[in-house]
Image (cartoon, rainbow, N blue to C red; front, top):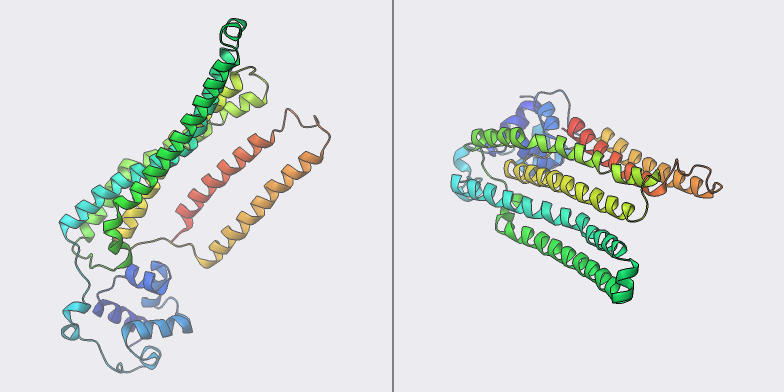
Length: 335
C-alpha cells in the first residue's frame, strides 16, 4: 500500500474529512488531496505529525507493510468518536451567528459614523454664527452646540463598544464549535445548501459595498478641488463618512457570516506559502511606497502639486485600494 492510500485509509478510520485533517496539519485541503492522490509527498515534519495523530509508526507510513498497530472501527471507543451536530444545534447556531454578525457590523459602522456627529454640529454652529445670534446668545450657543457634538461622538463610540462586546457574548455558548471537531457527514448536504443560499443572498452586498466605497470618495475630491467653501467641507466630510459607514456595515456583516459558516464546517482557506509571502512582502512594499510619496511631496515647495495632490485624499484612496485588492486577491487565490 502506497503512502497516499495509507493516509486516506487512516483518515477515514479516524472519521476525519480532508478539511479536518488539513486543519490539524495546518495545511490546505488541496494539500491533503494531493497527498492522497500522490501528486505530492508531505515533508518529514508532516510525516511525524501524521504518525502521532493516527497512532502509527513513521516506518509504516514510509515503507510497505502493515501498521505497528492498526485502528479498527470496533476498537474506537465511543468517547473517541467525533460528536454529531444535531439539527437543532445547527439552526440555533446559524440564527445566533446571524444576529451576532449584524451587531458586530453595526458596531464597526458606528465607529466610522461617530465623527459625523462632530462635523454636522460644527456645520450647524457655523450656520448659526450670524450677527443676530451672536448679539442675542453670544459665544454660549456655539459652545453648547460644539459640546453636544462631542457628547454625541462619545455616546456613539460607547454604543459601538457595547454592541461589539455583546456580539462576542452572544456566541459564547458555541465556542466549542471552534475548538472541537464534529462529525458533519450527515449535515454536509444541508450545510452545502446553506452556504449556496448564503452566497446567493449576500454576494450582492460585496458589489453594493464597492459602489458605496467609491461614492464616499466624492466628498474629499470636491473639497480638494476647491468647489466647496464655508460649511460645505464639513457637510461633505460627514456625508462621505456616513456613506462609508453604510458600506462597512454590509461588508463586515458579509465577512462575519462567512467566517461563522467556515467554523461550522471546519473549512478555512489558506494562501499557498509562495503567495502568502508575496502578499506579506507586497503589503510592506506598498506601505513604504505610500509613506515615501507622502514624505517626498511634503518636502516639495508648497503649491507645486496643490491642488492636484492632497495628502489626506491620497491616504484615503491608498487604504481603499489596498482593502479592495486584499479581498479579491485572497478570494481568488486562497485554497
